[in-house]
Length: 100
Image (cartoon, rainbow, N blue to C red; front, side, top):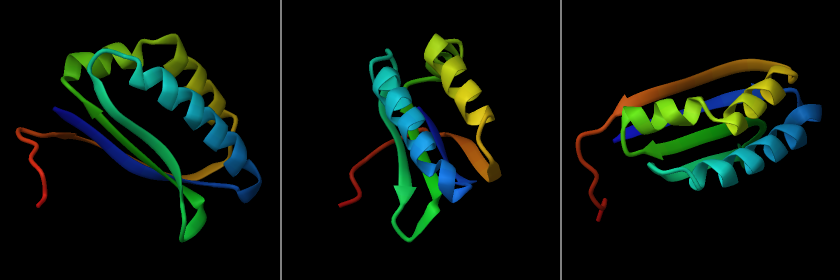
């Protein structure tokens, strides 16, 4: 399993645009084979910070995701925004189990 997790910081005037891009991306990504979770949301403690979280069945599924038209549109949209900081990482996970 592949986990993608991170944050990006935006100009306050562009947060709503980013969230709209994220909502479209989330819907399309969750419809993809191999995607079991996809989230793009505003940090309640810091309205200029957006969190990203994704779960993919495999690297191949993530690679296919990167090649989709909705990913291209999402990246184009993000490219028009003033992102002052972005840290997004990929993790390879060998096992998933309930916390409690």
